[in-house]
Amino acid sequence: GAVGVLSLASGAIWFFMVGAWFWHQAGYNPAVFLRNLFWLSLDPPSSDYGLRFPPIAEGGYYRIASFFLLISVMSWWVRTYLRAEALGMGKHVCYAFASAIWLFLVLGLFRPILMGSWSEAVPYGI
Image (cartoon, rainbow, N blue to C red):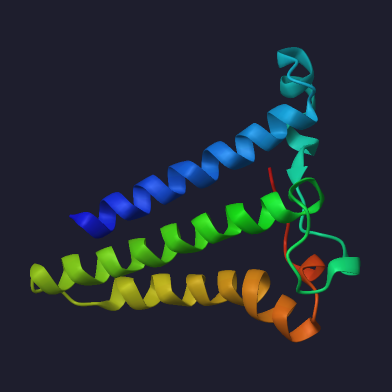
């Protein structure tokens, strides 16, 4: 359905953005990319910016990628709920997934907002 397509599309955009950032960090060199893959990361903005939107190269790219990841995860949850409802199944899997989403939201959204800085968020990396 449309929600599943939205989830897959936004998840693919997030994956491409994080991969492109890793590629940029490796200087567009395949050997460096493969060698340093486990040390590359897309980091949140520094605490100097607080909750403001930072420049793209200093954490703004992280914020944009986080938006696409949030849309992807939340729309996938809606999809699992709607599929369970349409098939007459129990919604226990949706509720279990919701608890994992709660942890994701606490670490990446609620805690940074309450602490007053996006630098409190978890970076994306392997």
